[in-house]
Length: 371
Image (cartoon, rainbow, N blue to C red; front, side, top):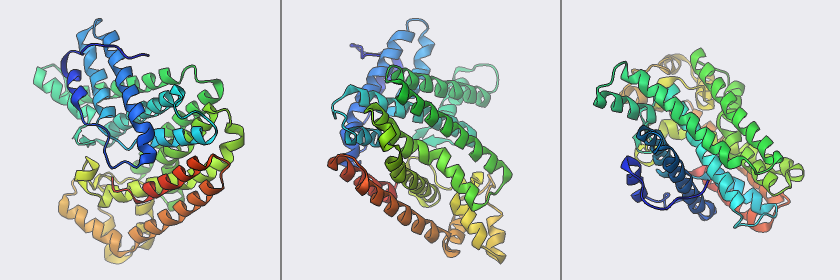
């Protein structure tokens, strides 16, 4: 796809004035974040230009994707892909790596939209989630049927559309890269299924919780984007092992930090409420550790995990339990140990020096981020 010139009609046009990516992203992310953002804009402008003449209603789902991918985000997946590519000898200005980064962001949008439907989340990146947005459209238009059901159906299709747009960017990047891409896509779906099952069961043991975290988020956030970058540079066979030695522990650290932020984070920084994992009973290592440690009154309080009616006081009570039983501290120690393993692997990886330094810096950012 290529960019088109001229203004867009309707609500998507308002996104042009949207803010740039957050200024507090580290330089190791910004170096690829800006080109990826420009490519996403071009891809979605082109898609809107192609489909709106067929039916003006088709602007709406594409505009929803556009708003989501341009509304911020950490751009970590493109960054890990970029530094593996550059570290393996790829040209920093090669448009191939920008396309790969944009594809990763669109695939992430697909996962977020579907995840929000499954979790019944109402906020994402400081705005209503897609299914909430479309339920509101249904009510405002006075359409027939159930607004919530319509919103969920529309959101599923919006997510699917983001996935297809991502696949279009991967086409032509080579068979080896395509195999990595397909493995990445399978893993994120498998991980999400395990997460749904774990939530339905009500609790899981620590090894299972770690496995869910690894496949739901860790692999597709760090390890597979690294592999994709190496594949695009033609060195995956040589670098898969060293990159996994870095990406596997850091991917787990990434998800553990996400778990802590989901319970203890600042809603203003995160753009969504905290405590949702507690209301939903998400099978996180944090909760698995707490269930191992808690007895008596604390164990009884943990029984409220998974209660969708938990109010702010209930969330605060569970936060206090997770603190007092030592679960939060144990997860923090795990993050530190996993990050140290990743940094050691990065320093030993057979990559260009600037890429090794960037991966070390990104590990520190992943471990200590506050959103």
